Amino acid sequence: MSTLRIRKAIIPAAGFGTRFLPISKTVPKEMLPVGDKPVIQYVVEEAVAAGLTEILIVISRGKEAIPDYFARNPELERRLEASGKGALAAGLRRISEMARIHYIYQHEMKGLGHAVLQGRSFVGDEPFGVLLGDTFISPETDPAGTSATMSRLVATLEDRNTSAVAVEPVSAGRVDRYGVAGGEEIASGLFQVREMVEKPEPAAAPVIRLLSDGGGESRHYAFAARYVFTSGLFAELERTPPGKNGEIQLTDAMTALKDKEGFHAVALDGTRRDIGDPEGLRNALNSLELEANLRTV
Ligand code: UTP
Image (cartoon, rainbow, N blue to C red):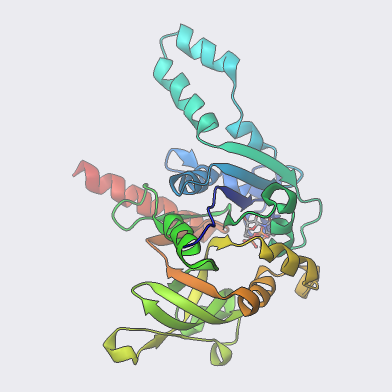
């Protein structure tokens, strides 16, 4: 029986957001609104729903709108209450109180692996979750709701004592945009990972062999912005040499960790909404609008 219990999460949100220029010069992409809240709030809510209430958000210069958003503003709350808008004040308090949120600066944007490494002293020797700050997961049944993906990852680490990553099927033509996992399905939606490759050429991309159809079918699966790790990840990140653009690749450290401790993957529950570029944001907005229209019919 495992003794690992997760309560901490790191949310990297320090990236330049070059695909969102010029807006991202002054507005962090993680603060862009989808429906009635910014993307980063969906991400924090996913962590909290999985029991991860100690959260470290990795930011960079110019991203102070994120801590401002989650900070309490007692003066504003008092004014709202005095003018009969108590519900609005309570809503603001809820945003600030749903988790204990801490912040750290990544002074140089040396990639996702480097961003996660900034959380080393916050995490200590506990297991932890990682949720990319510019991506949220919409449950199929309710695009504005909270996906069970993070909870499944937490359960996987607690049951099996290994790190794990959420994955979703991806066509061969798109594997060169993502980290891609290879291995085999060991239970419905749970995979043993044997191989990981960052942005592979289609011909070299690993596959996961599925249990269905007598075990014959194989598919490409891409990493989907949600992870749980043992604290062993940090030693591997420290050892990972910078790669392309001087960036420390999370996938390289994950591969080293897999070789030492084993690694699992779980099927994404819902749809990944990556708002890192305008097309992704448009898709997320459209899906929410569609859902709102269906509700009013
Ligand atoms: P992305 O690669 O999508 O973000 O990283 P980016 O670097 O901001 O995007 P572009 O390419 O310039 O448009 C995914 C997540 O990791 C964070 C980002 O903020 C985003 O939430 N990240 C990325 C960091 O925190 N630090 C980094 O050095 C890189």
